[in-house]
Amino acid sequence: MTRYLVPFSVLEQTIQGGQCADSPEVLYHYLKLTEEYAERLSITDAALLHQRVFNVLLDTVCDTNLAPHWRQTCLDKVYLPLSQLKRLIVTYQDARNYFKMEHNLRTLSHYFISSFER
Image (cartoon, rainbow, N blue to C red; front, side, top):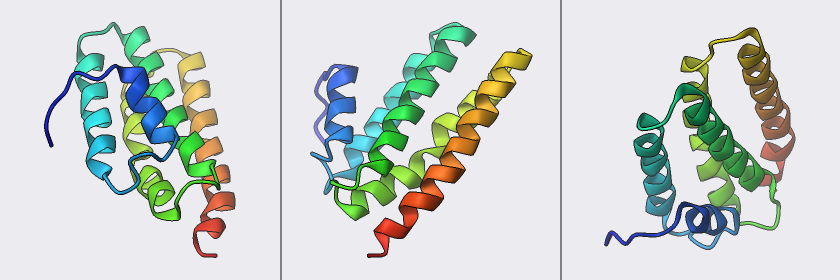
C-alpha cells in the first residue's frame, strides 16, 4: 500500500462509509496511526483518542447499510482501542466510562451480529 499523508478524519469517514470494504489495509493503517498518535499524547488525550476510534468502529459495526464483511472486520478490531483504554484507567470515572463502553459493545454487537448471518 502506498503511503500518502491523509488526514485522520478522512480515514474515519472512509471507514465509517465502508468506502474501503475490500481493503482492510486502510483499517489497519488507521489503527496503527492511532497508536502512533496516542504515544505522543497525555494520558487524558490518548484516552479520548481511543474512545473516538472505538466509537468510529462501533458505529461502523452497527450500520446495516454497509457490507457485512466490512462490519465484521471492524467488529474484529473494535477491541483494540478498548484494550488500550483499559490500560489508561486512572480514576473511578475512567473505570465507569470503560465498563459502559464495554457493555455497549457487548449489547450492540450481540444485536447486530445476527444481521451478519442474514
